[in-house]
Image (cartoon, rainbow, N blue to C red; front, side):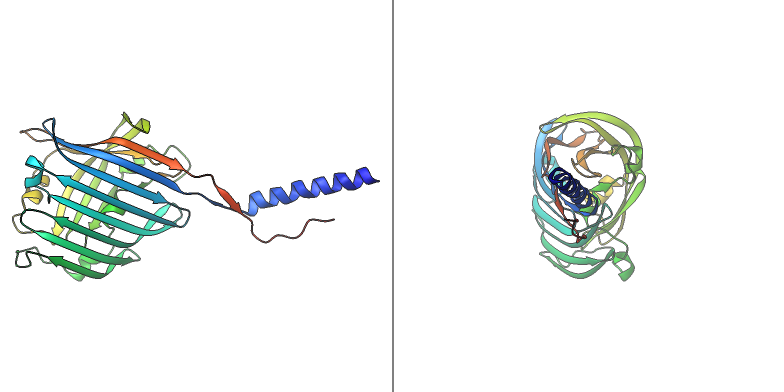
Amino acid sequence: MLTDVAQLRRIACIAAALALAVHGTARADSRLEAHYGASVAGLNVGRTDIAIVIGSAEYTSAASGRASGLLRTLLSGEGTLSARGTVVDNRLVPASFSARTVGDDETSAVTMTLEGGDAKEITAETSDPAAERVPLTAEHRKGVVDPLSALLVPVGGGGAVVAAEACQRTLPIFDGRRRFDLALSFKRIDQVKAKGYAGPAVVCAVAFKAIAGHRVGSALVKYLGGGREIELTLAPIAGTRLLAPFRLSITNLLGNIVVEATAFEATTTPAEFVAQPTAAPPR
């Protein structure tokens, strides 16, 4: 009789454990620490560091970088950016974005909130407010994503994360001052290697289209929109179905511009299961 009771209790414990596994909620954080070097014709001209945390319900992303030499003629000298939002069905839903850049001819700071894909409260400060820019309208603030969140690319389904599907999209980007599109299209799958990651990555062709908010006669807009061949290589973030930039290359007759990861270290914390209320096992 005692043996039967012990067996019943053992069965009840197993059933409770199964119920926990079925009804529990997995909670894990995936983190990416990436460092990039920028070069023009093989000469080092800048660096960028990115830190990303993807949780079960929220995400954060932060980047900082510095440009020098020839690259400084196209980009601000140095800058910091940050973004945060929620995670819904493997999709990132931006909630806030901020950026500060310091260059030779302008210093600027931007903060904005986003709701349902629309930019809401925006504060933009610049040391050159008189610069002539292509006018922004209310429509330009709708259906957009911030620059950091845009480059964390989700891949749906249950198949391979490194897939052509990642490149089949147009990214409607708004940074609080400038509105532009990046239209991606699939080119190939490459093998890449950096500290922390060695494996497949998907290469997308990129078409840049400036829409509004940029300076009239902007050197960067002219450069990117001049029919140059631009490639963006995306690698997977461990523990997620998201891809992040690994390499960006821009063909240039004077020497290609390349921004490439020297370290791409993704880690995932062990998942913890939080039980939902269930009926007590029989005694």
